[in-house]
Image 1 (tube, rainbow, N blue to C red):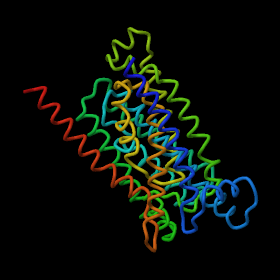
Image 2 (image 1 turned 180 degrees about the horizontal axis):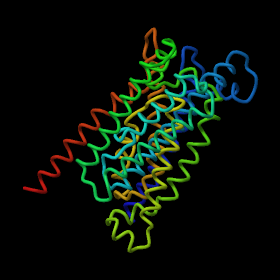
Image 3 (image 1 turned 90 degrees about the vertical axis):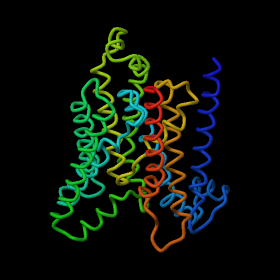
Image 4 (image 1 turned 30 degrees about the vertical axis):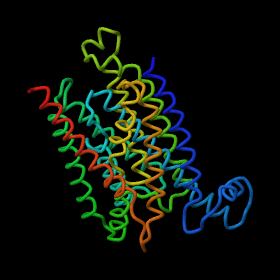
Length: 336
């Protein structure tokens, strides 16, 4: 029982942290506002302050929370499904595939940036990528096979993006897409929120429906099946849930990586390494990480705002390398 109590306190703390970061995000920018000003600007007409808070800061803040939570819960679900601590959407090409599909739709004029077809295309690309990974890696794939399959899919999606940029009929659109692919929440509106939020919320519900199965899957797929878990159904639901969330997130914010890897590992040790119980904390941690990153890019001085995808990569790559070294030492200790 003592393992569960710290987890409950941490979940409550993470929820409060997300709320605090939401307020700080609404306060942060070239025009500094107090919490009282932000509150009044949200509920009543405060002139310029209301325009800045409601039309500029609120959409990017909400998107940061939604997208961060989506990547956090998607990473935790993939790790639970594959029983692999390095499982994460960007390592398997899901964001890259979603970005390639969305970029193709915009580059060749099939639909505008605010069309429903952009997130639908992103979802289709992510669904294809994650589905192919599960099919290629197989039921009992090793870490090496899984990572190699993911690398191949991510590389293919990257090559598809480069091809799309080369073939784009309008060079200005190609340049705009190239910057969009770096990941950014700047200049997003409530239309982007209403466009992507339904898909991300549906993704959370689908992944939450599989949560109890992950505990049984830690014993292996055969043991889970003997306990009544429909392994194939769980696999399909996770693929669909990850594709819905990642596809919608990438279609409105570009490629944002490593949040799904970092978030579950930051909270796992506090929950007894139970994959079922880390879904909600991972979502909260992912939201906190992305909101904090978005606040950071607005505080860094410069003529051009740093892309948030660059910040998450700078945080995530060292974290990923540290995990690789940790896994190597664990393997060496177990074989010595």
